[in-house]
Amino acid sequence: METSQSEMVEVLNQRLERLKIRHLRLLDQVARRGSLSAAASALGISQPGATKLLHELEAALDQTLLERSARGGQLNGQGRLVLERLRVALGAMDATATALVQGVDLPLLRVGLLPLVGIEALGHVVQDLMARAQLPRLQLQLGTVDQLVQWLRESEVDCVVGVLGGDLTPQALAPFEITPLWQQSTVVVAARDHPLAQRRRVPLTELQGADWVLMPQRSASRKAFDRAFLAAGLVPPSARIETESFYIALGLVAHTRLLAVVPMGAYRQQAALVRRVAMVPAFAPSAVVMLTPKGVVPELPVVSLWREAFVRAAALEAAHLSDQL
View (tube, rainbow, N blue to C red):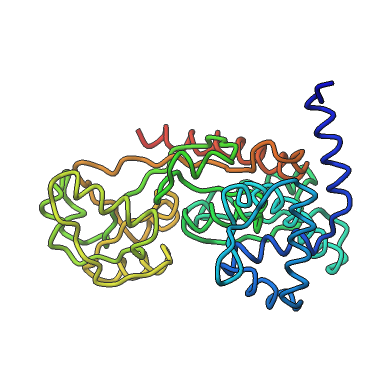
């Protein structure tokens, strides 16, 4: 008699119930440290103990998870697929432990953010949730696009709000649910008395030799800056000063002849000190989105509330953009 898929799932679930958290952490440490021996050391167990845990995990899943090597083994394709699912559980357990230790009776939400998102939108979202008595405890982690996606993949954050950029591929985004929010504009700014700020049109060729305050090379902002010049057949300018802070860049620009590239939200907040430079062609806007794990476990209610608040903030951002046109 042929076994149905539901029966096979039930058998597998019974096997998985015999596993312990240490089995899950072993697989996670093998992926992070590159070998079974290094994972054993990180967990404070012997190599034979780690091998025993691995055999128990493989037996429960009825799958080979490691490619054996002189160093003890690395995850194979099936092992990486299993870990992708298990990390969601590990992330949830870590968040639960943090909440219990802190002893506060509020849900914890771990959010990965691009710095540009926190300039205006984050304030609207927090204000909105406070007014509705729905604000959770927040842990905000800032990073580049690629870092944020890696953290979400490894369940170190519960969701990410950022832009679709960096070195992301469709394959890298496949495990995530994508919620479009708004289009983020980027502008060139200068001191209010800067000669370029007085002109109605400034071609890229005249900006190529300027002194710039720019974000680091790995940032989405810097990559968009470089793409604009490359698309015009020009070599992107080098940074005279590099900083990860838009506000430091704005402060430097306000008192010098330096130019900077900042999100529209940052410019709006400092418009009394700096002016936009009418660069032609203008930077293409970036799509700001929210990323969450796709269909692995039921979504946390606090993540759903966060998404709804950002969708409401997106409507405010869309109104701002309409006012600028």
